[in-house]
Image (cartoon, rainbow, N blue to C red; front, side, top):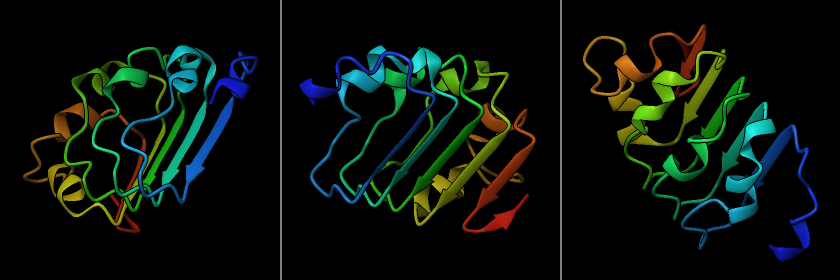
Length: 122
C-alpha cells in the first residue's frame, strides 16, 4: 500500500476481491477528504468503515457489496450531508439495520437521496 502514498487527490476508489482485507488501507483514510465515490466489494473480512469515513466530507456515493462481516454503519455517516447514493448488497445484517421501517441504522442514512438495499431502491 505504500506505493499509493502519492495519490492525494483521489476522487474515486474501488476496492474488491480481497478476502483477507480487514480494514481499508491507510492511504484511503489519510486522503479520504477528496473522495467522492467509493465502492468496496467482495471483501468479506471488512468489519469497520469508521476510520476513513471520519474524513470523507466530499463523499457523494458509497457502495458496499459482499462484505458480510460489516454489520453496522458508523455514526459519522449521519454527518455526511453530501452523500447522495448508498448501495448495500450481499451484506445481510447491514441491510437489515438500514431498513427504512425497523433498522437501527436508518437514522444515520435517512438524509441520503437514493438508497438501494439488496438491489431494491428505497
